[in-house]
Image 1 (cartoon, rainbow, N blue to C red):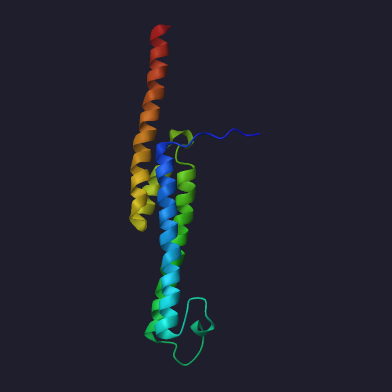
Image 2 (tube, helix red, strand yellow):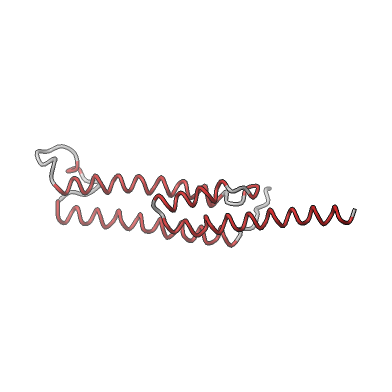
Amino acid sequence: MSTKHPQSPVQIVGWVIWGLETLVIIGSVGVTSMTGSLFGHYSMMGSGMMGGSNMMSSGRWLIGLVSIWLIWRVGLQILALFGIWHLHDHNADTWPIILIVTGVLGGWLYLIPGIWGLIYNGQQRNQGNRNVQDRRKVN
């Protein structure tokens, strides 16, 4: 049986932000599908998206742009998932920096756990260095 490490406050905030971002993505897919079916008689999942003589209509361009946006955001969500999961691996700065880049590329709320993770990991490293220096002083 494996032991589960407790989540840091940084990771808990990261998971909350990840959940909110996921809800935004799911909500935008729903709104886009409803809007496309109401105004253009096309939905993202519908059969009218491909083919037909009306290929260059504005509704199809909108659905195409939203599809690209959706793929981009899902990719950022997957990257953020791993970033939050491995936020404190060996107190390295790699995953907090990846969260900051994810925040800059689209999910700006990921800047919060990214920057906080850099600060938190830096404090943990400094605390570890102090313990080593204190042991050297005693010996």
